Image (cartoon, rainbow, N blue to C red; front, side):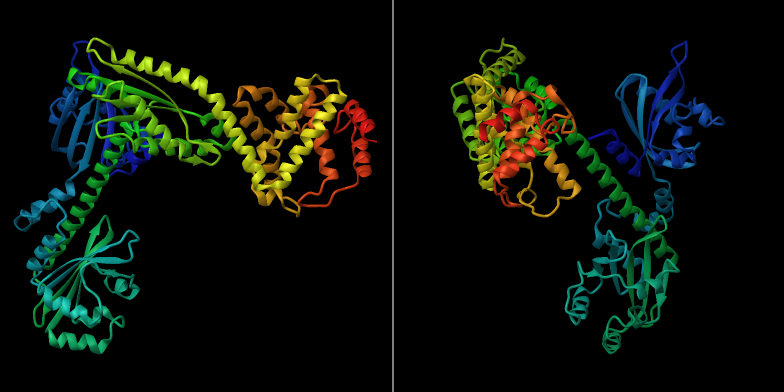
Length: 637
């Protein structure tokens, strides 16, 4: 992931962040700090934009404040110089706020500081300490709700929190005579706990003006949502009096409420304390969410630092650290298996990197299933994976590799059979260097890949051709005809047998790049759209990428790439002209055009041979090589 991803995380965090450097004087004493980086949260607290803070000294940002006597300033300097970390809470005079501060250093004279603003919490805690000191730090909705009912003097308290959309809400807890409440709401056919409530604009309007809104009767709050006669019956049956809604706020946004139901004749107790408690609850919930989000972010960052983003396997850094960690006598013998994915370049070049990514993920997933606990599998390169097998001697590894290869062989991704080249080596003696063992395994893998890759690519190309021809029988017939015509023209031109055979193969494979084009486009009778034309015109390049992955088809790939070039230079994809176009490509262009005209196609009936000859003569010297045209026409007239 790029830097913007991590920058977004920092800027969205409720935690202030800054990275700085300590300035040391000639006597090796810290005298100032320079701000090297800062997130939006802390910049907002300071009251300046980031651009006015980065690369500025502390004394420039806060010219009226000393940087010698404050504990936090000394802490920053000590951590930057000596390393380690410190964590504390302090009031920062320059910002006029209380913070929970964590400062740490990964490089001498540099420090990173995380600051969480706890000013509001401390203020509320100071005021409401007498009734909040036993509040659990975890979000215990029932305990919070019990506190509210006690403080308010309500007979029942219902604790609601808004969903992510900020409109609908869910009942998290109820406090009071639970059986009575269940019976009451049983009248309406649902259980109260976990009940989701759709946005009610009438209710929202009634409580929008005040944090605490008191209603004389339950029916004043519910309005027409619940049958009025039923509400009146409930009010009499359970002696329901006042109903108060206490909004739970955070930064001027309502995130939930306490709905308090009083006994008839009773009034809401201590509304100021109740409002304060609701405020504390809002702060607590949002702080917990922020902490959980920060913890989740840190967990993700930690995960990403040791894992490959694409496959979810461990990465090379972790793999090498594990090789060192596991390199001990008690783990001997240690075997290392190196794997290199076959066909990845072909997949990337021909079908795009997203297809290659899916191929890698499937191979990683399949291989991981065959690794036991304690065996480390990692992606150590673009197409390379490696496995550490502690306490596994060399006799066990071939069967282990065979199991993986067999499992991979049962799967395909598109036209590619899942396949890898393997190499392995085993460390038997403590004196051996584990990294030398890794190199031996890697060399064996490269040797095996050299032997296997050509066969694998040939197999893949055959599979692609078969798939193309199975999907479109006309393409198969067309390819065979073009191949035959190419061979005939090659003989007319006096090419030797090897070159005629090569030309024949090129004619058969000239449209292999059409494998990426949907059948609906290939068979379309109507005029093609611009985007469809663009897809069609890409097939020579796709064919080139497919064929160039196999050394024996390297020259044929060049002919396939150029078979839609024109003699006058107006063709594609490169706009080559005349003898810049390979001879074989000029032959294919003529053979393909002739076969297209004299054959029935999905979008029209065949033209006569005479018409085809007339068209070819007409385009001789513009579309086609005139010398080849002359010899070809003479041979078929």
